[in-house]
Structures are given as structure tokens and as C-alpha cells.
Image 1 (spheres, helix red, strand yellow):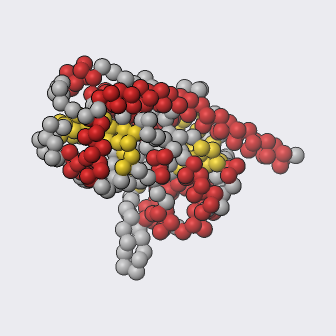
Image 2 (spheres, rainbow, N blue to C red):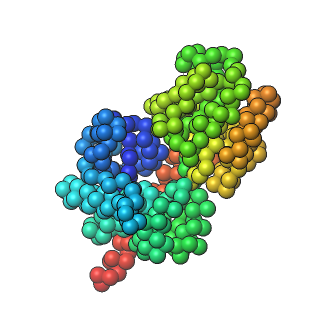
Image 3 (cartoon, rainbow, N blue to C red):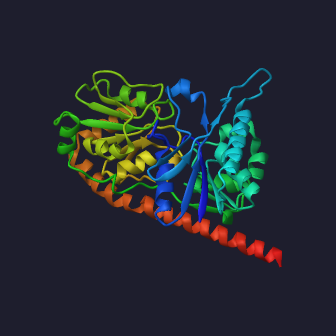
Length: 390
């Protein structure tokens, strides 16, 4: 099976840390003898933002990845309440179509990651090649979509998909109850991790490797440095406890600084598991998620979790592995951190459960399930086409 996978911000040699979870899925799908081709348009304005652009074409860990250039109009409201978002989506979709037509390769199925712009591009591409489209939804929120397209248009677009893959039952409920999509059209597969990269390691050995203090309690944050994720809320929660060090893995505008910051910045995804093993607790005071990969990676590394007492976490976390607090309540976050750091026996117990818990979320198994769905979709499509030709 040849799959055209459309994804925004697919990792590249220029920025290997972006949207790594999409690449892991594509890589593992290919291990089942699928043939995946990635089309991930690159905005020319990324040259200003990142100082370099991804290669127009490269083999990224053996997978052919195309980054055709396009002009993004971002998502800005102009006078009269007109948003530029739909213009950005339109140029993105047109770029995908033009580039795919030049490849002289034909997909059996088109797969879009997230609804806009990549999902819509996959639908348009599937229509052109007369093949089925599948869209994967893992968005933390649909508010931006609704403000630009409205529920009726979202229903219309989702209805074009042969199947919808979602990362949580919460997103499935949104599709069914708000966008009037049949439950039978939707498969729920939570995100998953590579258990070879994310596993329990000797903490002392890893701290020595990275030059981290051996006897200092360390908390770790993994995610974008933005308010929704909450890196600065974590830093504020520990500021009255100078003995606590913190590691922040990621990038973005809210850069944590100060004497308690032991490391701050982006690292290759293959090293994230090691950094997790160097810490005592994983902390993510996030405001919204779909199915958080960073949480699953921390669980697979055997870390106790402190995160948000909000519905998006309830499918992944329970009290045996996590303490959930109001992510905006700095005092509650502080007390949760202190309580865990002062109770090593509880941390050990949570760590053991976390390792067992994480066995349910292996990327190889998730890729196999998704490939089975794609095969079912393709078989059903071919049966309908053959029937229609009789």
C-alpha cells in the first residue's frame, strides 16, 4: 500500500524535533511493508522564524519527505473581522495538490494529520486521485477551526473522510455530538511511544552523562514553551525552593531562566528518554491537550506525573501514576511537587505502576492498528468501485 501522508511541520534535518510523533507513526507503518510518502509544505516565512528552511526533498530516516514552499498568511483578524487563516489553508492545500501532481507516483490512500490544513489537503488529494481519505485528529481544541469555518463546514469536511482516527474518546464525542459524524466512522487509538527510546534507566549514570547534580531533586518539563503548556508556571511553583532544579526540554517564546534551570532547550528526540530518566518527577501544568505524547513518554520512562486536573488527562492518568491539580493554581502545583519529592517511597511505587501502565501505549502496536484500518478502508473502497463498474 502506498500512503500519501500530509502533515504540517513534519520533522526535517533542519528541525528534527518538530512533530516527531507523526514521523514515528509513519516510520512504524513502513515497517509493515507500507510505502509512505510525506508531503509537508514549508512556509517561506520560516526562514525568518527559524533562520533556515527544511530541504525541499530529503530522506528522513529512510522516509521520502517533500517540503514544497508556500506563502502562509498566518491567522490574523483584519478589519471587519476577516481572518487570514482560511487563506493560509487554501494556499497550503493548493501547494500539496500541485506538488503531488508532479511526483509521477499514485497513492492508494491519502492520510491527513489534523483536520486543517493537512486533513483538508488529504481530502482534496484523494478526490483528485480517486482514492479514499483518512484524517487523524489529535487537536487540543477545535475553537480556531470553528471560528474560521463553523460547525456546519467542519461536518461537511469530516464527512468526506472514509474513516476518522482520533486519539481520545473525548474527541470522538465532539465529532459525534457536535459535528454529527457517525460513531462507526471513527476509530479511537491513543497516542503511543517507542519503548526502545523511552524506558527506565539508571538515574545516576544519566546525570553523570549530562553533567547534572547527583544529589539534587530535579523536575522535568517537556513541551512547547508557551502559556498553554505552562513552563513558567512550573518555574514559579518551585522558586521558593532553591534546592529544586528543573530541566526544560522544548522551545518557544516563554523561555524559563534562572539559577534553578539546569538545562533549557530543544534536544534530539532520541535523547529525550535519557533526560527523563535523569529526573525525579515529570511536571506539565498544561491547559489543554488531545492525548499528550510527553505524558506517555514520561510514564514509559518510569516517572511519576504531576499534571492538570482536567478531562483531557482522565483517559491517560489515574492516582496510581499521577497527581492532578489545577494548572493555574501555582500553590497547588508547588505542594504537589513538594509532597512527591519528600516521599521517595510514593515516588517509587508510582514509578513501578507507570512502567506497567505504559505497556499499553506502544507505537508499533498503534501503527499496526492504524494500518489495519487503512487496509479495511482500501478494501471497502475497491469493493465499491468494482461493484459500481459491473
